[in-house]
Length: 273
Image (tube, rainbow, N blue to C red; front, side):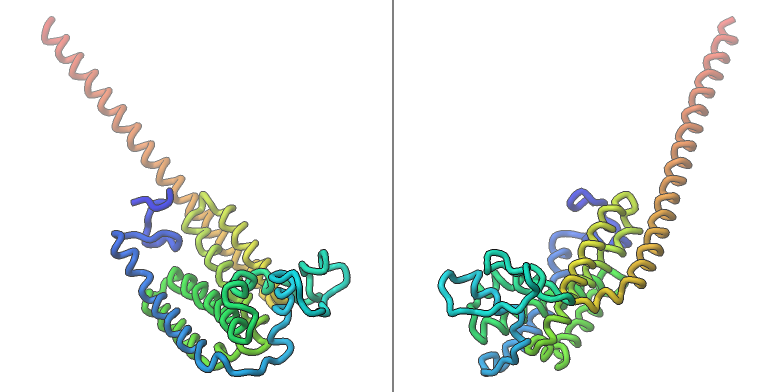
């Protein structure tokens, strides 16, 4: 069975085998994770009080969403505030991706305290969804992956992180999980390994731009690339050997049939004589 041009295989982490009903059923555990976290995230969501770094750099979306605002001093590196509205690099240790990723949610939810917390909850959902995708395609059963993500969703450390300044350090973990998800697809699809490696590298780069601490994972990521690339090469060699063996077998059978036909013709000619 092919889905999106890819042959379905149970060992392939990027495919979803089965009927349409079974494919829809695969989303039920993830839906449970989302519902559980939304219940947690909306508890006392209107309580006042936000520490200054809990809205940094989100406060810069105000100038992007509104033409007329109160004067806002933008605290970021010189030369990184294009047209006095569009931030690029906030500081040497993090970029402005939270501003741009949060922009549509601030437009939807508003730039209030509730809007801020709902937007940060979307960042948390990104971490949970990416973690579920990684776990569910790395050998764990779907219910096991969902259980692990539910445990994370109800963990006060996780939920409180997205109500404090820690959201900016934890949100890029979604990119890291997506990077690993793409890496583990390399052995499963060796013919597309460069595409998956590029996707993995891009996702990891976004995590580092999100916050500098993810650069510390670079040695482990390099090792993972080497190991998974070696697995892809081995899988590709195995497929090549299998194809060669199949071609040889087919060629042998064809020659056998040709020889058999020639023998029958020779026998008929001898009888006619």
